[in-house]
Length: 440
Image (cartoon, rainbow, N blue to C red; front, side):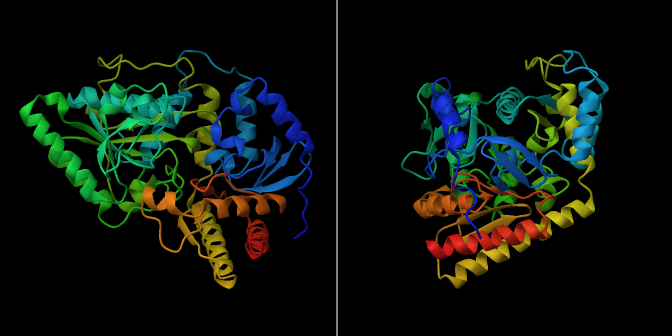
């Protein structure tokens, strides 16, 4: 393939300009491209599976706004519905019929969700769900898994200590030890690590007071924030059994997987029914949105029906609701067949290229999300993800960018496929990957 994207002078100038007024020049750290080197392309527009930067370079895009653009950029039906909605007003701070319609559409696809509350981001959804779980159970502790990301609220910015399962320590300046102390860290795909934490808390519960018990276990059913890591057989089932036995709530963070890996999310794919579910990305069709929902007896604790306070001026705004409804309308049986076919084709092409050039690598995929890890064995949890060859991924990323393929700028991220990634786009991606891998 011809190197089309070596000239990014205008993007570089914009990055320098932004860096004078925005910390790091970006509004979300990964966008700075520091883990892969160089500076980010500044995007002007997107259409289908492609984006164009300020310099006019075209890229086949596997970021897709980090997942929500499952129909592709600027899908005509979504654009039309948004234009119609915008002409009626952007936000009212009062209810509209669209909130109820999108709520019904989500609940109709997720049997575990009886009621739902819209917010403005996945971070807000996770933060609110944990507050609700603590109120419902009367307990303080939350178990999360190293490498699973649930937003940047203080209680989630905790990392494991030297052991596989231990009390969390603050993982960011500004997070207090007190906030991190109530977050317990287990290892993904390691049911014993979660069981051990439950056992510790049962002992504390018996000897101290009720609030020392585990309020909830929160997990990405398919990890997407340390690269794509599927759950091993028995892992999610075991978490469900543990929570049911201990009276704790099981929370599935389906901000990424909801509507992407199946019509009813990962819980449909794996046949597990959580107590609460977090949503985002796709239900806003690319606009800022989040939601959390679950059993009615839990959700009914929310104000104004119950005592747990949560509010937001732009929650359920008509533009985000419209984009979400238009996006879900496009996700029929045929759409999921298209996504699966494109994902399978890309995976097979990448695996064959790795084999042909004798490069150690593993492609892990669930539906339309995948990650290429430069390693010689499957990645099961964060410890494995941290040991892969991230330097080689950075080199691979730069060579793919030069060839017009835009990958997430981190080896810890998922690649996202849309229904707009047609056979031609996938074939061009594989051809670019073969050239890039040959040069490594």
